[in-house]
Image 1 (tube, rainbow, N blue to C red):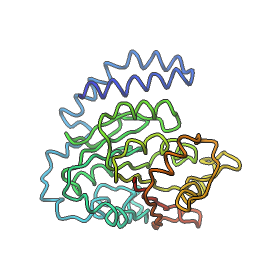
Image 2 (cartoon, one colour):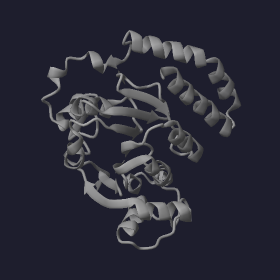
Image 3 (cartoon, rainbow, N blue to C red):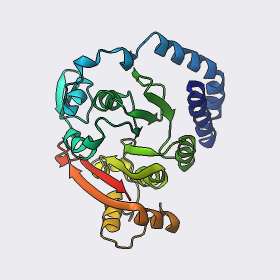
Image 4 (spheres, rainbow, N blue to C red):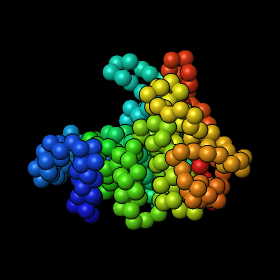
Length: 285
């Protein structure tokens, strides 16, 4: 399974370079494949620049709240984190995860996070949800600092429909929870949602973090006269018709027929005098 997942990621990394016509990088990465696999194996085997969560004494973490776990792993989903020595008040999403996902606390379920980066949130979820099986999907799947038999690393480029579809096809089982904490680009959010929402089980939950962050970071929304993801979801919630260049009629109909409920919450992080911590929980019918 380790080799299967590694090869899936590497194939898609190479395909991405071809699509972008980065031919020199493509050939360089072909020759780097074996090196990358060996170094990854050794890094995990001997915990080089990585932490094996399975070997940590669970007693130290079992009594911690989810927010304290986020803080411990310096994850910006918590109430604060440190950037160097600077304490930064962050999104404070832990209260909403507890509100909507606490029923999964002691259950076995499968979670996918887009934009897992170093794996700080997955490490937090590892201890808070002791039976969860987790997948961290990222544009650089080899930067995860935390490892476990319950955590899988996979490649995804959320700006590419082909990459998202490839990831969807690779995931054998339906998922219980999907978290999008990836690019925060308006189009990417919509495309990822349209493809991966279908992988959720009945009653599953799709979560989009920082859903309006592009209102502050204008480069994340280079589009004119396009509905935002939040506007699309509110139209679905209110059973109003809508138009989006990123959704065909079949996909739009699927979403309308399969979304049971939508909960919109707001965290606490302020940047450029604006709250950038809108988070949405979308429940599948």
